[in-house]
Length: 331
Image (tube, rainbow, N blue to C red; front, side):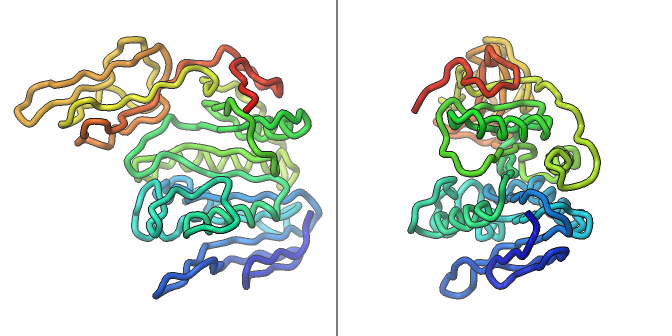
């Protein structure tokens, strides 16, 4: 629905658009403030929350959220749009990957009632989501990680009416790869998480995946004019099949032979590790025929135990369906 929106000291009436900083916490010397856009459409429609920067160095997602926020016109919008381009602002400011720079913990998707700074940021995201009917969290690989382009991740609640809405969001986003979470997820509002971009880079095609996907969702929800683009069957569906985390056994310099998203054969060489005398001390191979989804090829120097990549075998079921997939675990 459309109407007045309030976040902190920022507020808009019907047909208005505003942006500002929302104070959520303090350090001894400064306030922790999140950038927020509030857009209240002139006409009635659903409310959508878009967030980015939970992983703070995923710059393609951050840029996409900013662009979406700028392009939407309140006069033409049906419903409400609430956006936050950077959630983990302490880590964004210090270019700290993966964890909150203040308490060195990741921002939780299910925050506790009380907790340290990462939990406070998680609560802020939950507050923004509570204002909406649907939510999309824009992600990607962090500063040391590259990902296959165009992933959408969705969960299952076991409630067909709820899961149908989630699957519809996935369809409208038109992913190249679809990751299905194989365990029950807490049911709040229908939401998806998208992944594209990484390595601390701003690459236009990665940004556009997020932008075009969100705008197509908004067309599908009837929030902006135009018909949504038709469904696109994903090239790769995973999450229920076997997952393999590749780690270095030896330390040295890593020499990559592939790129993120590569189709792999069982036994295919992914990369090698050389010592400081120029000798190859380890060869990393794929344990299965599948695809490398996440790849830490930006890490040229590795230690024993460092993660190199994550390989998934493809799922047997590849159709969009609200039926629990094979491999479903009622947890």
